[in-house]
Each structure stands twice: as C-alpha cells, then as structure tokens.
Amino acid sequence: QVQLVESGGGLVQPGGSLKLSCTSSGSITTIDTMGWYRQKPGKQREMVARESGGPVDYADSVEGRFTISRDHFRKTISLQMSSLRPEDSAVYYCYVHKWLSGTDYWGQGTQVTVSS
View 1: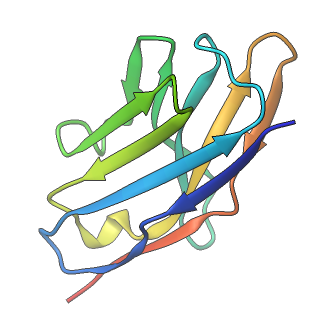
View 2: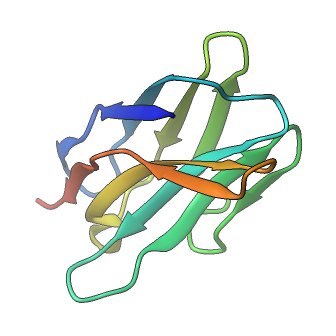
C-alpha cells in the first residue's frame, strides 16, 4: 500500500512560481513511475510530468516551465512551476504507478490557482 500527501498549492499571480511537494509512504521502487497530474473543472485528469526510474516526460503545455524532481531515497517528488498562466489553474495530484502490480495510487490533490 502506498500513501501520497501533496503540499504547496495556493494562489499565485500570472508569471509567478510555485513548488509542489509530495511525500510518500509504503513500498516504492526506483522503477515505479512517480509524477504529477492535474484536473481542471469539467475536464479529464491530464498528465503534467512523470519520472520512470530516469526518463522524464512533460506535457507539451508545461515543457520548459515546469521541472520535476524525484528523490528516490526519500521517496519524494516535487514539481517546480514557473511562468505560471491562468490555464495552469487546477487541482494537482501526486501519482505513483507500480510496475510489478500495475496498481496506481493517488494523493488527495492540492489546488493551484493562477490569477491576478
């Protein structure tokens, strides 16, 4: 079983920066995927950034503005968001995909609002 807890969301002005953090408990190996998804009102959840034991994927909409960082020893993952836009406003979820079992785990989500 894996538990994920996000922190760091809030209100920020357009062009500003925010850092999200996710702490985990339970068994997570280096080959398991950890990452961030987001969900806007009335929309499906979408991948923002994820790291799978080395390779990192970013959504086109955040490439060059967001940076994911994973600490394999502490089993934490963070998302540094810069040059934020109003369209980045969403609930951001921490995510783990365990390759051996195929199970997905989600945090409770943290709200990010980009507005002047």
